Length: 433
Ligand code: FA5
Ligand code: MG
Image 1 (tube, rainbow, N blue to C red):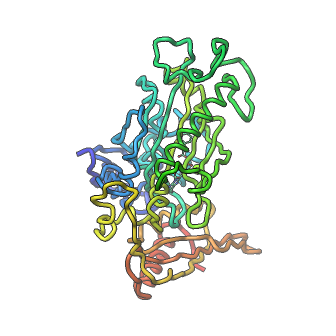
Image 2: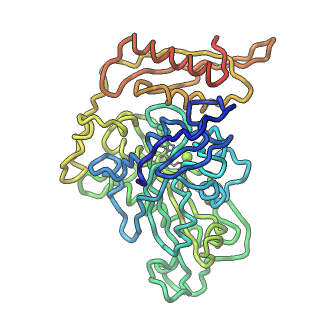
Image 3: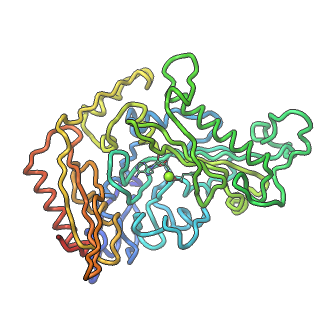
């Protein structure tokens, strides 16, 4: 029952006209539980159809294969519900009240207090509170986002968190003591100080704490990445065999923060975000004498790089010509994926309209996702224009149509393109040009 998702019309709402049908419901049932709808509700039937698919627990699926490469020491949680509170998804991670990541245009809200998790970090607080020192979480996450070969509104994250103590805490295993591998007189090394925040550390952390955590974090991720990409001995050099680079980043819940980028089809794409967990989060979760790092990795991107999968939409296909390629392997390294991508080039069609003041691009992307049944590969904004007299703004989008396994006919492309146009005019309050 936990994995089912049934839409239930209890009573149609009178003046809710925005978007597809879910918002006109009084109550909605997600993963076996009923929720009241309100002015925040923006989940669509299309998105709800993905809840419970759980690609990460489907044996031999390329998402399952990459999450099976576990790190020793870490407890694994892969069945935490994707329905979380706004408190879990944002507040517990110190996301400011006016931060853009909370916007309705970025997330799928069930109602003003409940959201489909936008990242697995939503569970950090509760798992730290439960007393764990090293844990991994794997799960489906949901975001209103751009449309292309490496973005999908539903994807999977692998999140890792590791806590450390000071050497004074004798009752703990040395594996969880941050300074256990340091030589010399380590008795004077302390985790905390009453200092200043700099680019390298938080106010309450010593520089030693921050640097050692950063080193251990990056090492763990590099070891994991090499383990995944290592083809043959001798040991892989991360910088040459798979092109990767660390870049500085910002997250409200970590400092310092980093992102790992990886070369994919000639372009740098972001694979994971990570950093030193803000001490306030540990304090609020009852672990005030410990420090921690955390990372969140996109499993689709890892899997696409590993198996050379050219389009993220493959992950959702139930087509056996895709899935059978990952079955009955001795070792995932022996898998050689052969794309069944149609040899036909993508068909590009433009759509231009005047936008209203409250328009968000993700509204359009989400609408395309709702109307499309697997034909749209990429949508890009190609032109914006402001009318000199009326001051009205117009957007022109180019939609690239391409199926993952078969050629498209001009007629079906035209048909879908027109349906997208009509839906945009009737549901987004835009005016065609
Ligand atoms: C986060 O979600 C943070 N929670 C990660 C984190 C965890 C930082 C712990 C610090 C500590 P971000 O929004 O960058 O960060 O997403 C993480 C990864 O998810 C990205 O690097 C990318 O690999 C993947 N990802 C993001 N959006 C999409 C998408 N639309 N489709 C597929 N994968 C995506
Ligand atoms: Mg990011």
